[in-house]
Length: 196
Image (cartoon, rainbow, N blue to C red; front, side):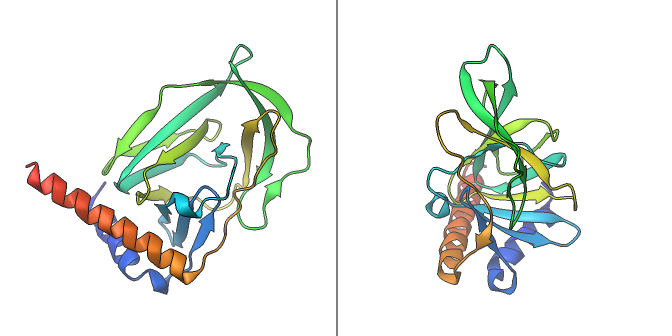
């Protein structure tokens, strides 16, 4: 992570009311930054109950943890895998949803979890299945190309798919999330300074 990235994200969070934000069902508040990508503030208080979190991306994913901590959990489709899931195509973004084809039953194998701290960047191919497990208050910056809107979603067999479609967020919820994220950021910076 560059100091310039961190400074840009910090300035946007401090003036958050000047930007358009939505909340995705994963408990992720997000705003787009032209020619950069998206800022994400992770806060489980605003997650959709029972939301389906496993998915692929329609583009190569590159995400930097600006503050906080995030676990990236990847999965592989494997006929011998112990996890029985349903897979379907989804149209991403606002107004998106299941693409209409019936879901297919697949088996998945989980890979070792990857932990990323502030300053870390992780990447993955569009075909890789994953879910994000962030600490509340974590802030990430994701490079987000335009276009390419179809992805895959996965949910446990025997349950219903629950959409993570982004929706507008109320101002007081945004204020709570930003305040908490900035306090975590400052606390983390203070701890890092003390350990030097």
